[in-house]
Amino acid sequence: MSNPETDCVFCNIIAGQIPSYTVYEDEVVKAFLDISQVTPGHVLLVPKKHVKDIFEYDAQHAGTVFARVPKVARAIRAANPEIQGMNICINNGKIAYQSVFHSHIHLVPRYSNEDGFQMKWADNTDQYDEQKLTQIAQKIAQQIGE
Image (cartoon, rainbow, N blue to C red; front, side, top):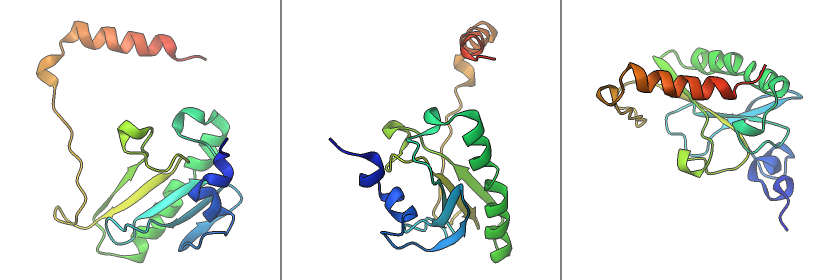
């Protein structure tokens, strides 16, 4: 049987068993360059505690991990004044393009509309009326605990 913490590429990077280009590290996270560099300065922020995806975080751990995102984002932008914006993405599950099953946050600097990064959002406004939207919202709200 496999062990996520020994078979996980990010756990191995955190342990220093695989080299990385680290930009920030503390007791909670490690942030390093994504080797694909979708755009120059593309960084992955990874919790040191192995969690598969967003669904495995508890509120406290999520708060400590996500609190580091603005600090790293500001450093990326400060390092390159040509950056005009940034996409911050977290993919959860294979269907959502998660390829390493250790939660990680992509910080992708944006330089122009032709910088190699794209997101496509469908506009399905015409398929939803007030009744359908209310029904969806209520189903989700009922699942949120105190």
